[in-house]
Length: 132
Ligand code: ZN
Image 1: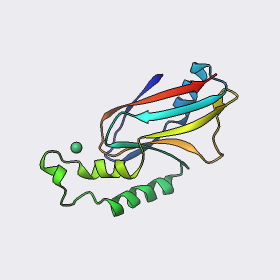
Image 2: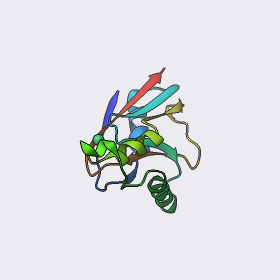
Image 3: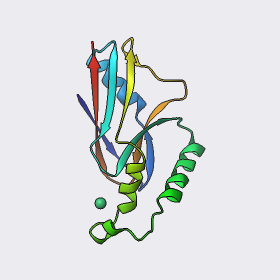
Image 4: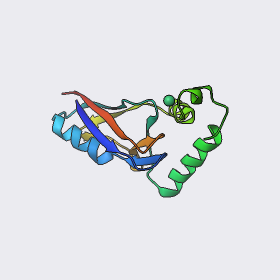
């Protein structure tokens, strides 16, 4: 298991971590199996999609539309990030990718994207590769 540390700079930010995960797969020595990437936080998420600037902007607008930054949130009585938690719930805390020939088996346009929803903060992700 490998821990990837990320220091985010914005409140909502999308960071491509494909090369870091690929390196973790190589270091594991696994040729055939499955790789799981998991975030240890309740206000972050992982997605597998195209890394394209305008699409990332569309994602941010999508999140703002479905979970507005400002709202009558109960959690904000004790914290100020209910929108971040709810956005994380809409997305996913983990993704799994097949490993073949010692490498991630990804489609041409698929990148592993870490989504910060309450930055800037220091974050920890786990990469676990299982196989032979
Ligand atoms: Zn909170």
